[in-house]
Length: 266
Length: 166
Figure 1 (cartoon, rainbow over the protein chains, first blue to last red):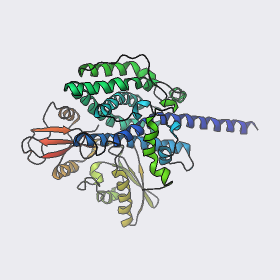
Figure 2: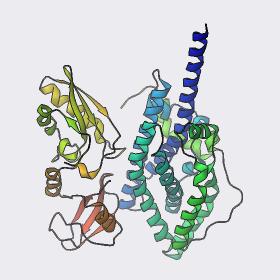
Figure 3: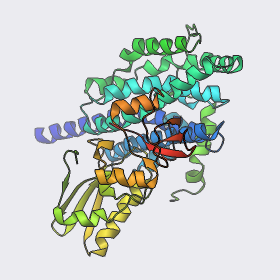
Figure 4: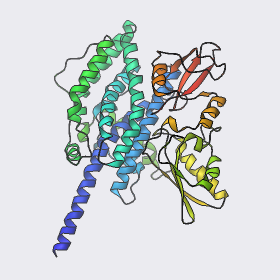
């Protein structure tokens, strides 16, 4: 009798641990998927050939990282779940990406500002995630960090070039930074899954990265002759699945084929 | 070859050398260093490959090509993807570097030199057309994620540079 009890309790624990891990993975991977989707919208529409190619290259890196995470989450979920189910068949509330990455491209300044504000965080996150006690997450992070450092170099260079460029480029990149700044604080919010993942030794305490993040961002904005916005109130909600109005349109695009032709394969 | 943890049964090497990288056909997947293990497990061969970049779209094709190459020798192969240890450009063999250059892609420099050329501090990448080092980077991202786009100021030819990845 007691054996049955303890084994059923153990089963619950394993399920709990898997569920925490899955939610933690969504919190990281959904950012990469949605930012990758936004960047891929630029394919064929970049301001020039080189930035067009750069944007799609970064999108591809992010999509590759997403696949690694989702394949792992699908394995944890078990059954028939595949990476595609996770990418294409969840509802809006089930995506746990931060609001920053779903913001629309508008103009090139927004593309670069969004990329820069996320890259600066992404590098810091993966630097820590490499030390995760979960070997799969550590391996994805070790692979991804090499790519994300390139992304950061690309977006930082453009922040400098636009900020310290012509009066028009300066004005436009400053406008984009000012608009997107309100979404930066959410990067450091900790969900219940995040906290549990940290306790289990597999997750990163994102809240601890905040000070260093703003220091690094400030330094680069200063060097680019840009002003650091002063803001006391920040937007949040993405990590709880409550998104801005842009998300529905993005998902409509992303999920169109699977929703129209369920189960279709390339 | 400076790669670590590479375990490939000797008699399988020649079969794997016959499989080329779909994006750079002059290079075999062995020269790219993407094959990590190839071992017999009873009658079948288990092959582990690692991607150059997370999103490398060539991996599925490489997997299929490996299975086909073994099937031609009446050997059943199973291919799986491993992420750790992460691939580095150090795993490209000398023969691979030579093949890249001949194909028109400048081979990766060392880590420090790579940083200097990508930041525009120094001109070290040799033009694959005329050999001049009077070259400059046009874009950090080239035709694929693993390459940067360069231009030669001497002969004016554009060319790809295989970025150093450590």
